[in-house]
Length: 263
Length: 364
Image 1 (cartoon, chains in turn yellow, cyan):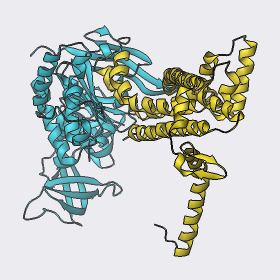
Image 2: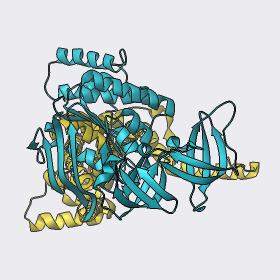
Image 3: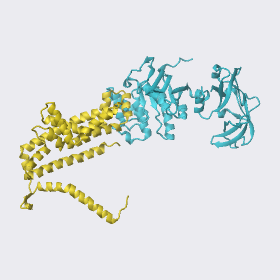
Image 4: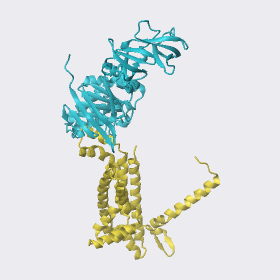
């Protein structure tokens, strides 16, 4: 281990503390004010309540947004998993020189600024005369999270020794049985991890959604809309919910990826 | 004479190329039903390619693969009545030993109860009773090896293909597994095709050895044949420390063949030498243990040498000698070690002698 002087440790510790404060301070402020009210330039300490959350529960717009978010996430993640797995299998088995180009195409929507991805989808939907709705949002999200599902499944697939597949065929299994009994069980943890991560991405994706949606609104979009009408405790409550939701998913994903890592 | 053994699998003029490079030149090989054949060769000699072609993992570029006389070139791997023991064992890591061994029966749709009985039977055959519930990662290398073996034999294949299966084991365990495999092969009366790069392993285990080099079969024969009567210089050199003496091949005589070289005239009774044309250059082969030091007057072959070195290597002592007629060459003699020490010492001039029946000639 590298040894540092006490002075250096104090300075580095202070920098780390400052970075954490800047990173997480605003989040805690938001969480704090989802439970307390701020009036007359002072925090009203006796105002602790779940009112903000209760009013969210009764806000039909919010309920709709939550359902839309879950629907978009669920469908686009499922689509991305199926497509990503198929593409990963193709990349792994193909000897074509074009497979790397294909891989780049899969990654592009993920790597490009979301506004570019969103705009190009928007232009396409307009030109193709596809009315904007939740369906277009789902398409947008699928395109966006596909790269993630593809990459995680491919990484796992590449750690599976070719001899396992050969052994399965050699023992008389059909291709389907080999997939079912040998490959799929080895891919389960990778599929789980990519499902959670992809869902977390879809959950708070805003820009693409904003561009390709019709009248329907997802949770982050609802938040966006609420903020334009001024800050209310509801917004803080909503931020807190989104924060807890995505952090929880991220933690779950880390656990899964840890399990999915090759032994 | 007993009936000639039936041919199980036959390769006829089989080749294999990878992107235009031929790694397997036209190969003919007939595998007899019930035999234990080892395919021996250095890495890159094409031995694994042969195994994979028979197993159906690699398609031959040209030529025919016959099973019971019928071409199986287009028969998919999962329909061939052969099973493979892979070099890395290829055990399914997420399945228990029981599930691994029973896999072949499961994919054939056997009933659960029957699978359980057969797995128990097979596990006891490889001395792994009670290990059924474990996972491969919980087993030692030798145990994993036996699970792979059990998995391969449970479907009662016509032929078992083994791809350097003992490569990852330490020397003691290796010898133990060699004997075990040999016993098992006799017990289940199945044909084994065993690929290895270890010549001692090949000799110990095989009924017949197929020696390969650079994508060609150099010789197929019993261990004694390839050891004492190699058909070419490569095989002669591959099997240890043969003495090779440059000669030119002379006429046929009563006892066999007359040869002449820098070191003098020789007589060789080797049976395969009769079809070699007169006047061709060749190599006379003498095994170091067949040479007698200070041989009697009546010996068929004799060379005058100066002893260069005598070294004790346990049960044998190794003597290096340079012929007086050509000091550039070194001949090796192996003697049984005796408490009294070797009968010669470095610097002495003696005769080395061997009989016509103890040598062999190959064309260069």
